[in-house]
Amino acid sequence: MAVVVLGSINMDLTTYVPRLPAPGETLFGSSFITVPGGKGFNQAMAAGRLGAPTQFVGRIGDDAFGKGVLEMTADEPVDLSGLIVDPNSSTALAVISVDDQAENSIIVISGANMAHDASEVARCRAALTTANVLLLQMESPLETSLAAAKAAREMGATVIFDPAPAKPLPPHAYQLCHIMTPNELETEVLVGFRPTNREEAAQAAEILRERGVATAVIKLGAQGVYYQSATESAFVEPFVVKSIDTVAAGDAFNGGLAVALSEGKPLAEAIRWGAAAGALATTKPGASSAMPTRAELETLLKKYIHRFHR
Ligand code: RIB
Image (cartoon, rainbow, N blue to C red; front, side, top):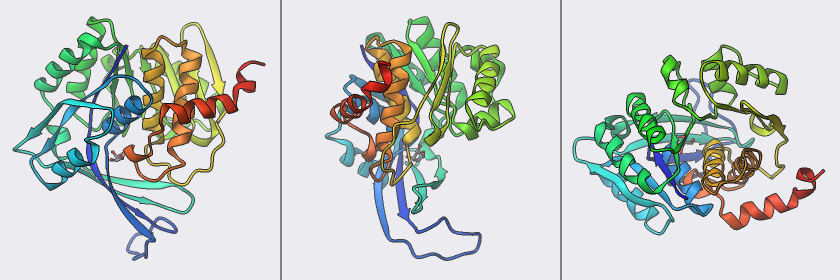
């Protein structure tokens, strides 16, 4: 069916540097790009480019960055009718550095993202009348996201919650998630240790499931992905690509996962879609700009088909 994404939309100001600067250090970078980002919007772009009818719900400010975001995304396959312009807030910004190893550091100025209120929940509810998956993250108010999760569950939609950037969650948050998708750092914030291999990822997933998450998906970056539901668990080996920029790889994962589930694909296949989308996003610069197309994803999945039919 279709995907709804409630969350952040930022203008990303990204510098490419040989290495991330030390405190007090001045570094010369090699290049700079300005692209729309935000974990929420990146996930919507991933879902849209991968072929799902996708609506994004959020807000921007009435300012130059807000206008820039609208101009730069006008031709993208994401329905922005749920995006409002808030005259009392500024468009969110992310100041990003990416080093020669494709690693990144990100500072977010939240602006309009943190002004989400009950009107975002109402717009989600309206969008969910024709959708079956809701994607949420943590760059907008948790209370609003959890209200949207509750509405989605009542309407029969699958709730995917990406706890990024992580902070400790109240107990009822776990119970509202059909699927939670933390990376290693986010897992550490939630469960108290950082998983470094599949055994530790399995322990972390068990803890999340005991708290009420139906399916826990632990993203281990270039090492792969572990997932565990009530009936199945597995470790998905990474797709090997030439990474140049890891910004938004996790967002691409969530977009891929959401699209596959919206199309009724089994969980194991949906996790592979997420992993493939995440890998592909690291092969291009930028955030929303790096989200793969469906053709790119299908080509990568075909390359690895032997792995899935052993
Ligand atoms: O996940 C990547 C995103 O994090 C960037 O696009 C940036 O805007 C921050 O929100």
